[in-house]
Length: 44
Figure (cartoon, rainbow, N blue to C red):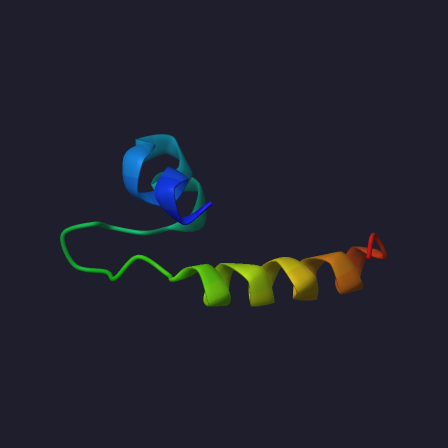
C-alpha cells in the first residue's frame, strides 16, 4: 500500500496526500488506519 501511495497519483489524491508538502505515511500508519476502518465498518 505504501508503494501505491508513492507511485499512483489517484491514490494520493484520494487520501489527500500532496507529495510536495506532505510525508507519505509509513506501512505501520497505513495498517493502523486499515484496522480502524475495519473496526468501524465491522469487517475485521
